[in-house]
Image (cartoon, rainbow, N blue to C red; front, side, top):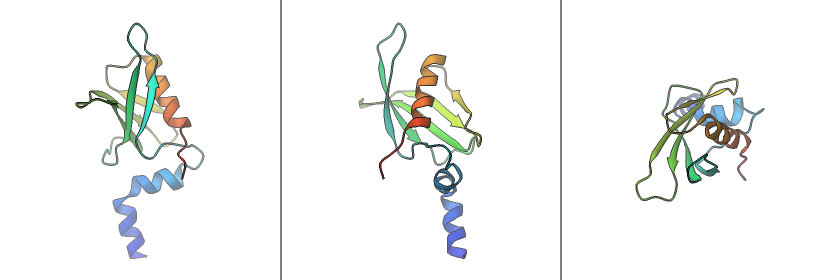
Length: 110
């Protein structure tokens, strides 16, 4: 039992992702999403799960994909009920919704 608690404390967000959020499918590794942008070229973003964030139940960092020096686009935070909020100033509301929908509907092959 002590070993389980030690593992649970170190990796509580991974445990939370797999066990407590069984009603919703959330991505667990990094992924890439193509967003359509208004009046600008479309963009491919890399979404990375942030295991060290204590700001929300789940936090995803957003970066440009396929660049040597990726640009930071902000982050999306999810609470226990599945509500999300964008923390950044680059994406419009429609673009934020595209990224959030992708994260909520993305299912990884195991």
